[in-house]
Amino acid sequence: MEYSEPSLGQRLRKAGKLVLLGMVAVVVFLPIPLMHLVGVLGFLVLSGLAVHRLRSREVLKGAHGRCPACGTEGSYYVGFGSQRMKFPITTSCPACHIGLELEPV
Image (cartoon, rainbow, N blue to C red):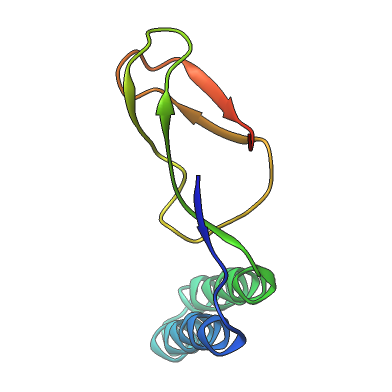
């Protein structure tokens, strides 16, 4: 498994981008009746993601190994490169599509 430890500055930038995107959604949808609720909801969801991103000190970048079911060697999908490091990690084999739980060795 590959992981990284983004600095506080990197985490603040990513979280700030999410909050800014949420504010843009509020500003765009605010003047439209009933759609302003979507903007506010979007802001709340993106703010929650920003807090999650800010708290993630270790993030998972990728995983590679051999499938115990079919024996195929390959890379496993573990998110978009910013998933918080928390075990076990649920994924599936790209060849046989069996569900797998990844643990550190």
